[in-house]
Length: 191
Image (cartoon, rainbow, N blue to C red):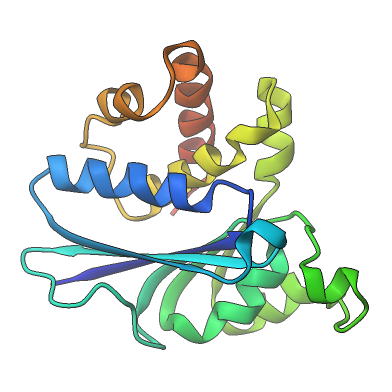
């Protein structure tokens, strides 16, 4: 049975790096894995999404609307925007962080004030402040790894050697920090 993980955020948040680490771990665990990335003006603060599909045999790299087992949003408005991809019994993990996209910054769109409440009306939702958790660890840039930890825990992937995977993907000076961030994210999920 194929599992579907959708990671969404705004350019510069490390969404794609988190997806690549997840993909590498799943590959090393023996899963067939397909990953696709969508960059919507990501270098200019636009939306970014990564689809990660894994199982015994995966045919397509993209997740159809209504098929994601988990939606992990690095920015809360992006969760609301991509909610249509989540299964009715799926889980939304939402970073309680606002990073307005370019249309909001230019005044072409308005940031929704009740994004998290709206998401909670539709699906099981885990809300955390991964950005603050990362800052508490000493570097806000590891919020993506905190959120990766939530995926690992929510999808029951703790048996994979994530320490080894992180060591291969991250510069040596940042391995310990990233491992702490990963553990922090895993500890934030109670299912």
